[in-house]
Image: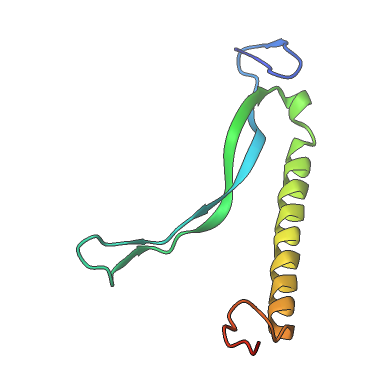
Length: 105
């Protein structure tokens, strides 16, 4: 038995409980190296999503939630990909980027 966090109804014993991520955040982990040998890479690091808050949902309240979360993750990934490609275009097409320290004044 459990209580649904959305509809507040107590569910009967044996009713499937679905844990739903209500709040997520973007996270980026740096790469980790062996403290004794700095050339030895332990973990490449990476980026993704971390669950901040979860709720228990009954089967009725859990319907359609997976599609909403998937759409949110997909839209965030698309935005990041567009920002990265835009930054690459701007940096490659700009002769006066921040890496150029040779300026004639």
